[in-house]
Image (cartoon, rainbow, N blue to C red; front, side, top):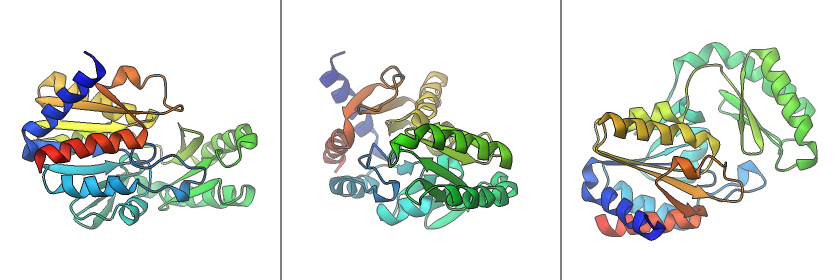
Length: 262
């Protein structure tokens, strides 16, 4: 199916049953352009406009991200959104934050890892996340990429944490089985139609969860939206139903959906 036809078909699916439809979105690289410093990422202004419109019309709209939920709530201040952070380890629903109880035994280990990494690397490299995990970024220091990666893996081993490779980063997190696929399955349960938009390796489990739900018949329709960029993983194209170009392309798609269900 030509790309334009696929997009039109996806929009028709997402607007046929608005109150029975879930829309889930990644943050970095999807709603917000990738930037050198992790703390400088902001959603496109029009993304906020379209999310505000959609949250009034669809059954559920949520952001599912590797970011802490506090960061998401601060920079996407829209009532009615569901926020899931740290790949499913924390949530904010109706203003209430909850943390997966399985992470609690590892909080001291995360704190010790943060102290060790802060002593070795500058602040722009080390991103603590709500006390639940910590990410090392080498985008601000590409010449130190190997050193940062090796340090992250070594510190994870020494503190009993699990390393997770992401785009130009490594996250040290509690070693529990949870990813965006798990939370996607939870958030779409009981609805008829669901979509997820993402751009990175961490989004692939969410796409797989939607495809499984569609195959099992627990969803009538699923739309997997790939947000492309020069840094997109090679598996992305084969894992999605439609593609858009960067956050600008995703926002344009959201605007078309919002126009249809207004």
